[in-house]
Each structure stands twice: as C-alpha cells, then as structure tokens.
Image 1 (cartoon, rainbow, N blue to C red):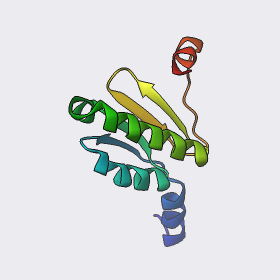
Image 2: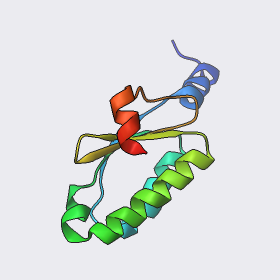
Image 3: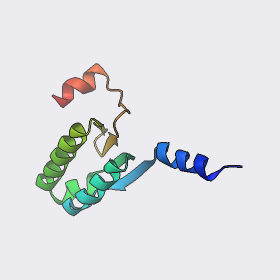
Image 4: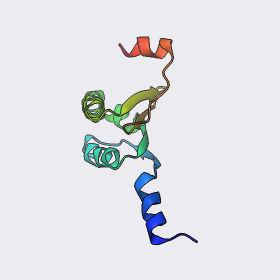
Length: 102
C-alpha cells in the first residue's frame, strides 16, 4: 500500500513522455510549459512546416535556445519530429547526425 509520502515522492521524480503536434507558432507557449514541467516531448512539426517554414524556423530556434538555457537536450527525429528532454536526460546522437546539425 502506498502512503501519501511515497505517492508524493513518486510524483516528484516521475518523467512523462508526451507527444505534441505543432500546428501554429502560438503553440510555442504550451510547449515551453511542458518543458518547464520536465516532460520528454516528441513534437510533430509537419503541420506548421506546411503552413509556414518561416514560423517553423522561428519556433525551432526559440525551442533550441530555451532547451539549451535549462541544460536540456533537443534533436531531430527524422524529417517530421523533434525530441526534447529535460536536464539530466541526454539524447544519443551519432557522429553523422552531429555533423548535420552544425
């Protein structure tokens, strides 16, 4: 049986994996909030890319800056997705992928 203290500790250390679809630049605030709550995010960017590559570039730059400022990690998952992790969780990037990001 879980006590209230053990349930509280479980909530404090739980990591959640969340999938998000980026449809509009206005979705940025909600995504930043999810990052602040230490969620691991998989973000599908195709809907925004089909609307505006300029908006997509701006959103990705903002995400990159924010994630780096909190010591999280961010990487592409193929052509359609990004993955973002909170501090303490790193994304394995092979040498080829690392060179492509530069």
